[in-house]
Every structure is written in structure tokens, then in C-alpha cells.
Image (tube, rainbow, N blue to C red):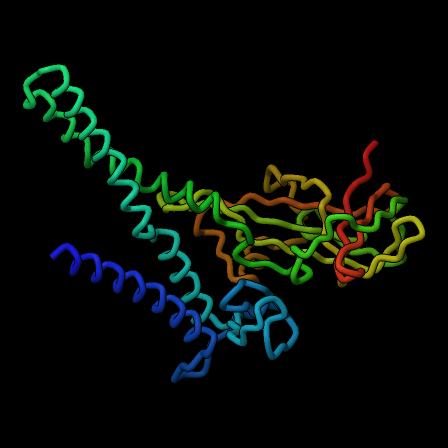
Amino acid sequence: MYREMDRFRRDRQAYISAHRAHVRASIAAGDYEEPPTTVDLDCYHLCGRCGFMTRSDRDSCPACTSEEWIDLANIRAADEMRDLEASERLHIPRIQDVIAIAIPTGAALAWCVVFYQLGAEIAFAGPAFLILLPLYRFLRRRLAKLFRRLTSKRPIRWRMPAPASQRDSDPDRHEGVATGDDLIDAPFTGKPCLAYKISVLFDAPGDARPPEWVLAEVESKDFSVGDFEVEGDHVHIDVPAEEIMHLADVNPALNLRDFLRARGLFDIEGDHWLFESRVEPGARMVALVHDEGRLVTVDAAEG
């Protein structure tokens, strides 16, 4: 009987995983009977597999080669993605459930052994089992958040050089003052810069995940660090991020709700924290060249 139950649980978990992949593929396919209703925003297309965002037409994702593109301007597709991601935030994998029940059960059994070794009546150990359910409920979500914190690596939505993780152990190093002819305005602060990285941290009350990064974007123009020319398409920014502490500090020209919606995010879902890093003209920077120039990481110079 127990083997049958285990097989049923494994089959159920496999079904859930396959169902989620199917839902993402269905959303990307967009096979709706009625013409799609869209929002009047310059929205991104989202890779349904890895979360890479693009505004240009692509056959396959440059990060994972998937062809499952989700048009975030499509209201129905964006709403279905929001519902799917909300359900994923509540989902707790079976192995974590097993650990959550094994810990209090093991503690209760150990308590009984201690009572037995002391020669006490086993009935006095009974209250230990009364805490099983409360302790299980206490541990269940906290373990899920801990596992997620240890295993989560990439933001849910991202637009950076892909792949941004191919870094050399001994990259070429260039240090100097950042200069460039073209400036862009960083979205959250509106400050002019040569390149920026923005990040959004999100938390929803009552879910099974810790606060997690839901957005990371890098935008850059071509610029120079000293005598070294940096191509904007290959930049990854490691400059320490500035947290935008208050909405009053956000660029007044930015409609934050529309900004998030264009990326398939909704400001009513939970709490959002905004972060921004900038490469400003005149700042002394360090550029590290990786992967034969296909990736350049830029950070502030020490001192």
C-alpha cells in the first residue's frame, strides 16, 4: 500500500511539473478563439522557459534557445502568467514537505526514547506528539523559503547580456575614467548615465517564497573606460546598487505602474523594492574583459 502511495505521489508531482510546462507553452502559443486584447504600452516579449525579455522579433531565445515567446502586451496572456506565477509561489515541493514532517516526528520519537531511558511512564511522552501538526505547519513554509533562497540564482524576468555568467578566472583588466558621447536616463532616478542596471525585489505576503528578484535589466551605450572601448551590447554592471527608499525619490517622469506592467509585473501583487546601479560620466571605473570580449563587467574603482 505504501509503495502504491509513493508511486501516486511521484506521478502527481511529475504531472504538476509537466502541467506547468504545458501551461507556459500554451500561453506562449496564444491559441485563443477571439482576437487578443492588448494594452497600449510598449511591452516586452518574454521567454516562457528562462524569463529573458526582448522587444525585437527573435526566432529563438539567445539564452536557452526556446521558441516559446509570450507577448506581455496581450492582456489574457499576461494575466495567465500572473496566475501561474502566483500558484508557483504557493507550491511546496514534496521533498520539502517530507523534511518538514520528518523533523518534528524525529524530535517526538527522541523525546519518547529519553522518557523510556529515564524509566518514566511512556504516557508522559504523549504530549510531545501534540506539537507535531503545529510544528509541521511552522516549518513547512520556512523550509520552502530557505530552499528557494539557496537554489534561486536568476531573476524571474531579465534583460542582460546572455549568458552573463561566463566569466574568466583571470580577465583582462582596464581602469580609467568613464567617458562617452551618448547618455541615457536611468529609469528609477532619471539621472543621466552611460549605462545602468535596475533590479526589482518582490515579496507577497503568505506565500512559500522569500523575497526574490523578479526583474533585472541592463541598458548601455558604447563608452570608454580610460583607453578601452566598451561595447554597450556586452556590458554587465557590478556597480553597487542604490536602493530607492521612497516613492517620492522615483523619477517623476516615470509611471511605475506602467513600467512594471510592460514587463508583465503588477504593483498590486505584493511589495516591490527598487534598486539602481549607474555608470556615470567622469566616474573612475574598472572594466574586466571576459570570454574574448563577449562580456565586459564594469565596477567602480577602489579609492
